[in-house]
Image 1 (cartoon, rainbow over the protein chains, first blue to last red):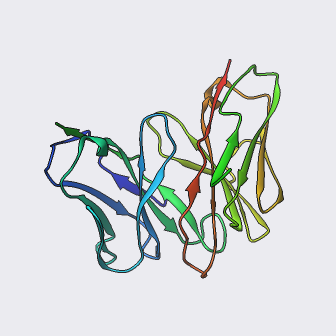
Image 2 (image 1 turned 180 degrees about the vertical axis):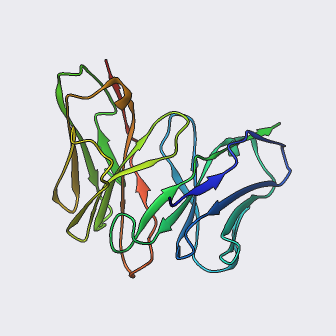
Length: 115
Length: 116
């Protein structure tokens, strides 16, 4: 069973703090990794994509990938109340849903940023 | 219209009804997807149309039937649904490029379906 695991939370952090969201995946052949943000009642929107080991930074967001440990994380610096949402980790799984693989989503981590 | 659009946004139907969900992408992508999102469960991939190839998830009941007349339009035909099929149905599109890599999927706003 190919899986993506996330802590469902809720993760509560004070405004201005660093929020750390973690995700593990089961398929060693995975090549593509994504973090989506989903506000309540809305559809997921892309935050970050990462394909290579290491860190990738975009504004207040940093994605970290470690393929050897099958682990991907998202750091949110200077957290704001507007960051309060559910964060979905998505990983492509080889051989699932077509020749190029398709995304398996985790259940999501609910983040709450307190003013 | 920009991005990925879905209609209707809300749908209430009885178990004997037949209805269809529509998705249209304005991004020039070559792959489209249907997902189901139920409360407290992860997004579940239902169907994929990628590079003219339809891929099915064998666990999707036959009461759900997809149709992709061209690369910009995707339908999900519904008939004799069950109350447990009530969920948010999301359409997404992407541009498939390199073998083994999955490009970013962009989601539509979803259709909130309630089956009575």
